Image (cartoon, rainbow, N blue to C red):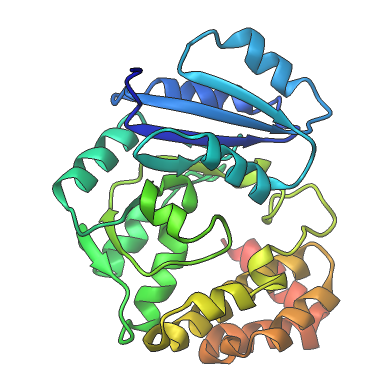
Length: 303
């Protein structure tokens, strides 16, 4: 009977030939070597999948191809193919520090009540260290559970300082959500030291996107599944979280030249008004874009 890996790493691949090598190399460099790497090519039109097949004879690397169905579907397909007791996802342009899987496995093995592990990261290409934000927010390392009384500050810091590229799930916790873009109540183990590099310069969804306007995430276009799955006592926190996330997405849409989509986000998620300062800023930007641009230019000139 074959010995199964302790961790399954799923990498969705779509036209990332220029960056997938650094991603795979960072996984293969992990100090915890008991893993499998499941790469799901989502109908790429470059030679990324062929490159992976030629470049990586390592038996831990498994390549699967599918017709283009989107990143969420590619991740879910990878999860179905995965065999490990822990499951994690890494985009084909991001990278890990060598100790990420080791910290994750040890933390989850020694904290049975934690259903997922997450860590801080570096925001690239600027090299912003999210550890500094956590330290300023008074975060401590160890088990953490979302509660109805969570402060807005802590909720905002969680959004800013932790990322899916550093999150490792117990397999049963992920399966209970029925895949991506659903939620489950669980306890996290928070690791403060940054253990990954999130590359905004190569992202198709953020400020660094080369697209004129990035698409909206399914959490915005189909939020009802998350709303229905949320425990009753956490529905208010979920709306605050959706509001904060919608504000960030609206800023991205404005930056990329789509004020109509930004306005839709503000109207569709009333939780935005719970973040008074950020809501006022984006309303000012939308009402007086030229004044906003001038003020930003002045700030940059003084920096």
